[in-house]
Length: 137
Image (cartoon, rainbow, N blue to C red; front, side, top):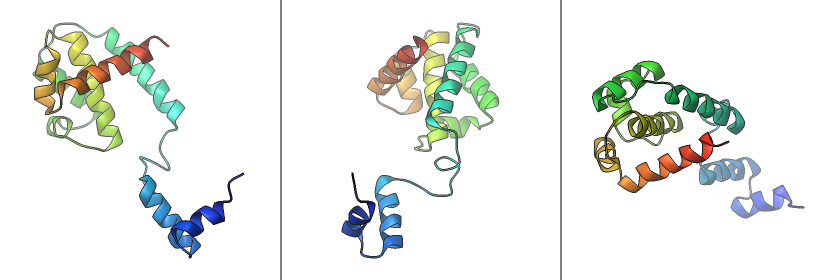
């Protein structure tokens, strides 16, 4: 069994400072809805599965602009925020949703999607493969 106080003592002699430093090292932000008070992993997975089902029922052959506008309205986020790079968990999930919808609902190539989102085309492929794995469950 791991002794918590021993581990924290390795980081800092004062327990409160050690806890704070541990949270910083691990990328945990206490008090932010995205982490502590937000939905659990399972809840997020269920929400993703529901969104996947919604996407499969949406009309095909839409343009990039239409996709961006539609998703920004649905997710209550501006088109500019949707298209600019971000590391915020919520926005990343919405951008992943945009990638999946662009692949499924338009004739765009993955390289074109990547160019619009200013990301590597391999990221587009990875997101699509993740979605395929989730949709089979």
